[in-house]
Image (cartoon, rainbow over the protein chains, first blue to last red):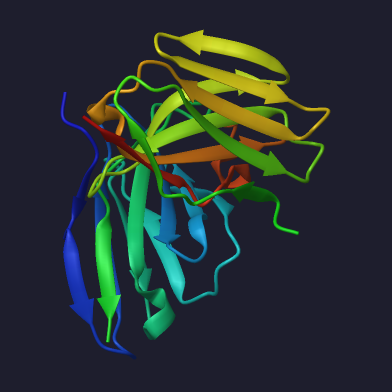
Length: 113
Length: 116
């Protein structure tokens, strides 16, 4: 069974640009969560989607947004990039909203110059 | 005071050693405790999941929760070079999964290196 896949794996952008990251969950998983991981702040929750609806949102500015498609694939978008947005962005999927176990993808490493 | 504190290490031990990884927390409402392992260039994977206080064992891994001291531990027996990774603790007041992945608070991780 294929795991969670994220594209692209690495990305370099400049300040002010926007970026879209993609996540394909494990087949049959309907819940997708996004996290930002940095050395300074650790792993921080961005948002969670289930059945194309955002169910939960972390404490991030409105420049961070996401969506989920009918096939459970999800994208997150960051507009007007700042240097501090450089991080590893992780996507995790779980079968349903009542599953404790979530499976993480390898992440997209974003560098903002 | 941060909600969850975890010594970043790095921690270096010889193969076969017993490893003790710890986290402290300040929120007495936390009831669900997890340990994740993250290899380099990979996402975290769930190792152990415990509810409330007590011990839980799974092979070479033992998770321990002491709610009175607000302290959790992960012990690794007979450590192997393949255990070299970053270990993240995570905790929540609500049962994770009920639309509450966002309630999980993670520690910053301890980097472990097991030398052959």
